[in-house]
Amino acid sequence: MLSSAALVGPAAREELARMAPAFREQAGAVAQRIIEQIQYTIPEYQRPLEGVFGKAVRDGVEQGVVDFLDRLLGNVPVDDRTDEVFRQLGRFEVAEGRGLEVLHSAFRLGVRVGWKRLAEIGLDAGLQVETMCELAAALFAYMDELSELSHEGYTAAQRRAAGALERRRKRLLEVLVAEPSAPRDVLDELAGAAAWPLPQRLAVAVVDPQGDGPAGYPELPDDVLVDLEGDVPCVVLPWREAAGDGPGEGGLAYAALRGRRAVVGPPVPVEEAAHSLRWARRLAELRATGVVAAPAPAATPAPTPAGVASDGAAPDDAALVDAASVEAASADTASVETLRADAVFDGPSPAGADDVLRADEHLLTLWLLSDPPLARLLSDKAVAPLDGFNVRHRERLAETLLAWIQRRGSAPDIAAQLNIHPQTVRYRMHQLEERYGDRLYDPDGRVWIATGLLARNLLRKQDAAQV
Image (cartoon, one colour):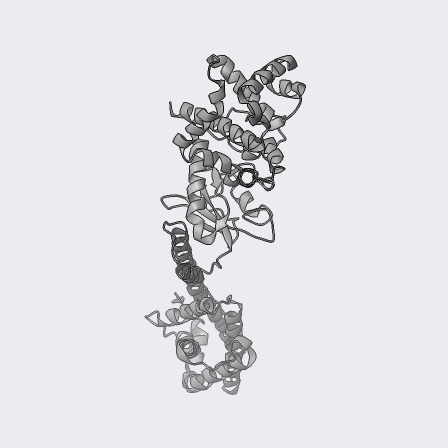
């Protein structure tokens, strides 16, 4: 609110009172001159002052001139009408998408025009130099107060606009991840209102809102949708085709998630965002129970045997099916190619994303555990040829078989992986060849055997977590 203090001292006010009629007589002309100069000088205001905006500008200039003269003469207004006029001018600058620099330039121009006319009247009336100095100081002090009022209106409008945009973006996020998927025209309308162009693909990440990361993810770019207060705190990351390495650009979005427990679903078309969220939630459950290992630290770990995570949890799918899928691809069969496409990740996680778990690195795990009864049937079929051996030897044979399929290495290589003697590997492989026969050398056969053995390991891990 404008200060209630008089703008000049008693002596100057008494002298200025004599000039009140002359000042007031010129008020309308001064206001019109200010408006003309603003429109002529400032490009942003070079348009007809019509409608609500035009009325606000005219009211601001005219009310400012009258209010200044009233306060100059000690007639302090008892209402805040002028306050609201200049707050409204600040709000209009937000609506126009500008900062306050343009409006404040108009204020300075108005002061120069007003001072020129007041000085002419004062000099003609023979005002003392001291009074003229106080008049000039009062005019600039008044401009500062008006600038502060416009700033109040501007910041208040900014907060409201930001709040409205945030609400629209949260609504868009809610609709994107809802099932069934909303029609495309509905998504387009919501995205337009939220100023969020729909990407071709996106990924949804579930996050722990109580993590150690910066509250609200202030470093996230504007094209990331965030809702940490919903029933399922999540983040929507747009796929940047130019980057070529998944959601986010150059790992930016992943880096912004650091410090929080986050699981990113696989990239999917916009209409399938709910699937990305569902798979991210499922993987988060598997991590919480220890079935899937947490992301590794940034430091390069020591070599770990294929198919075995350092903490005993399921490794990423690239390690699980590396050799099996690569060799099987040479057979050029549909089933083999499908398994490889689903299981092998197309590149490492972006730098700085060590603490972000990515579902597209665990698609095979998600697939095998999506239907546990079916996975058990597959597992039982894979080890059925080992029936008749005691439990302990059966486990050793299954372990050796998986290592052989994954590595396809020599007996010494497999022995080094399993920490046993090469002759023991040869002995076990002889038994496995007797039980499995030609299936060990058929690409499709190796794929389903390896898949069954992997399902067996995952199911055991899951069963242990549920005890």
